[in-house]
Image (cartoon, rainbow, N blue to C red; front, top):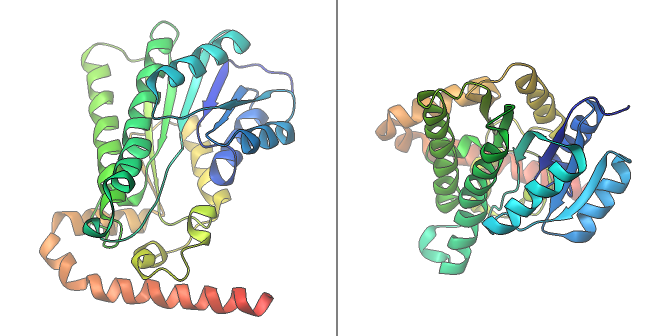
Length: 275
């Protein structure tokens, strides 16, 4: 397809969900900057996506590097129309068992990385408009035992996103949309190595999503921007209910975690049977 749109940036696009989102955008006619901290992953993904995709090594924690990525896509496409903050890190366990570097990594990638990308995109979109899509998580809406720092980083990401959207509207800027997509656990490399990890049980307690499920929702959000979209909707409602009534949620947490651990065991058994 010949490009009929401007440029798009997708962070963490070397594999998994990010790569599928990049494919969606190429199919829609964007010139796409496929960014990843892993140079080889970015180059492999871009090569698979064709001439409209371009690999770029990016550490989203570095604001100067993020700005350089923005300038790169503008140089290639003429303008920036879409920025997708997808890069994320999940390391499980109680906060008191994690060292400062581990806690800092999640906060910097998941929260600061989202802030860096959003601010860089807004600066480029002020004149002609655009859309920023932040891939957050249901962990940004409620308590997540076993993933406390991850949840903190995602709460920060959604709080920043919605507050920034409010600031845009108060400033009279109506041509920039900002959408948060909050999926349940996704069966991507982020969870592939968590089957034996009891601290990850809550991520397995609902409906494990395929990356394609989330990509389809991203497509709908591109067509109709919304501040927050949860996947699936019933889990979003459940997360919000737990956040509204935290004492009741605490009493139920052991039941929900037990359900997640049963799913982990079932998936582990299935994986072992295929070997």
